Image (tube, rainbow, N blue to C red; front, side, top):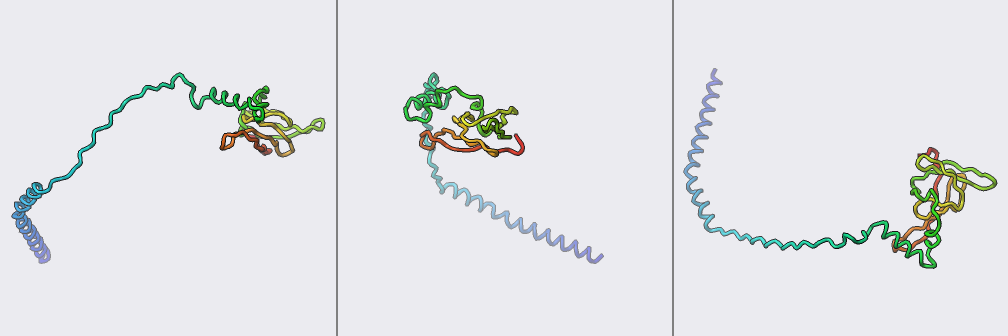
Length: 182
């Protein structure tokens, strides 16, 4: 009982000190308000005004009827111009008839087997769930690829591609035999 009475006295004393503290601060409020008003009068902010927005002059799109820069039409014209040069790698390739496997990119093809008939090697290529039988000299891929050699494990071919400078060069590559066709 004595401890609860002591507890009440301590709580009352704490509340009394808090009230007296708040009362003591109340007198400083007028002084604080006056100081703030004085600071408002003395301090002049220096804010630079925003510049006026630039006038927008719309320009009509005048290239609507022209050839698009990345169109196949423009590429075809460039290839034909390149093919007219007598020492161009593309000269013979542009004018020949396309073979069926030239409609597909090489990375969509898979070598699934090889056979030898009449002493001549043939490879079996799988493209879009269809099997094609190819021999050296046949064409494949979209970069004028020509099969140069067929072994039991790969089909070697050369392609004609553009290098970083825009020159046409030959590049050799091969399709490897796939254990499980895609």
